[in-house]
Image: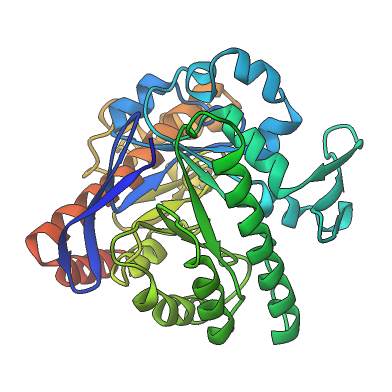
Length: 371
């Protein structure tokens, strides 16, 4: 089933929407917990569902390297393999290859790289990225893109963007014509072009020559300043189709999510809440705390007195610090539950503010509490 999107309310540029897939609905704006290897680290699917997660992200690159498409396909796809019954979005692998700068070589055919697992040579192309995502049977697949380096000259960004657009055409052709049966979901295109407004608009124009049920904004959260990132969003989003969801890839600070939502972005993903949890950094209404700080050794309060998550209802900062110092697995689990609860609640509150027509007021209060 190709995902369908409806806008239910709007407050300024911020949109309240709903994406309908064959595995359920996603209320937007939404945050997608990252399940790189077919698991959101430290969490069971039932715990994610209880937190209110409606969609998770799986990583094509890592799942292609292990366990491979055959064993996942034998289970009937990624949903059954990982026992998650809701929607799944799969990344194409482009960003992961981008991060392997010293191990990769980009050519028109695709990207040749050495596996970070065992060093063997792998070729990732638009065609085999689509074949892998079709085997995963994700609800939303992503076209393979060439994630532009930062910083990049306009000439460098143009070469990278134009390659991404050629790969987008090949991805689209392979995804929708790979088999006689309809694809399991829909394929999103990715806008590239670095920090150059004319290239971003040219990328969008090229993508819109094809039908995509949604569009992503890639090539950000790679080292640019907040001002530069917002400049790209303010240039690009007014030209993006109103009737399709907009996905800002890899941006995850709560403040950055808020800034993107008020500019019209609908979907987000980032490893930040789960990675921060494993490193003792916990999100609260007033900012991030480091549970490893010695000040919490005798602190009997919860992480956040205003939080209603399982962790905050049952455990103190002192206990969580103790678990972290002892390297107990339970500490990582409890921290992850809390951080994901914070992010999912943030999106729920944002949706409520948009529905009530007061997202600007809500945003000001949120930012003031963290200053």
